[in-house]
Image 1: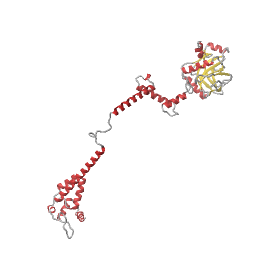
Image 2: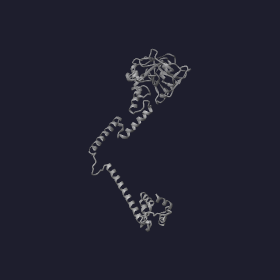
Image 3: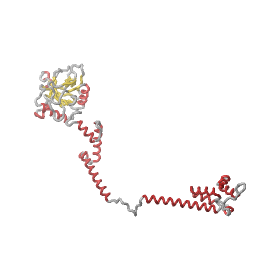
Image 4: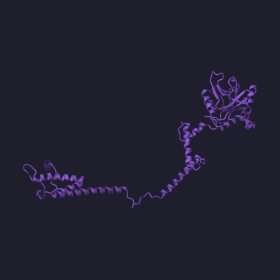
Length: 386
């Protein structure tokens, strides 16, 4: 390829970034056709509004090659962009050749002609004859690009032309934009609707962070799709808006039902059926107090009977048995049932008080009580002093 090249780009509808750039055909020596030069290139007379300069380096070329390689059909090489003009002029599209989507190659300097090449394009016999006879001189790729950076993103088709400044170029680019949409060519930054604006709206709708990735947004869309599929009899005919509207209607209906039901419920309890908790607590307290008083009276009576019958002798044993009864009244009752009364003590005129003794020794009766109650005599003697 020589250094001469010319290009043409025009204002586009909406924001579709499409350009038509023509380069002079030149033999590469290995049957390859150059589609783009390396580096930055532009229209010699200056790009029109919003176009050029364009850019293609090694990294961008690899992305472009990967995009094109995902296609199944060959890229058409036509004459004078007839593929794009057929809807306007009604003339048939006659192919001049074909480019295989897996035949693109990037060539770095110091190659004689660095840039993007189509290896072994399949020209028809007629096209080969026109090129050999110098009857056709230029190759003109139609491509999409990033309007912000100028990076070439995809190739729509390629034309052989002798008129880079084609009359009616506005119609050409309109057709190219339509073709871009119809074939869903990959363009991550430009489309009929600004993609970033759409992504921002999706992030807001799904309450995602402002830096949420495409995968995260897609995951939320998949959740919404699954929700529609599981809750709609005919998911294909139900939109997300329809689903939300139906849910709101259900919530409103349930709210009305609850309001109607609660309106008939009296908030004042029937005193014949329900007792305030304060009254219940007060009664429980009184019952507990009465129960405690009853037990104390029973213990007092048992101790009194024990003293009268001579089964309880002395203040120490009386206190010990009283404490036992407060802990376990059944144990006190059991002890008194087996205790043997001491008749002599029970009938003493001294009412159980120890008569004075010169040597302060326990009487035979008191020693008998200690043995019966398994009380140490010295401890019992000390309790009498107290």
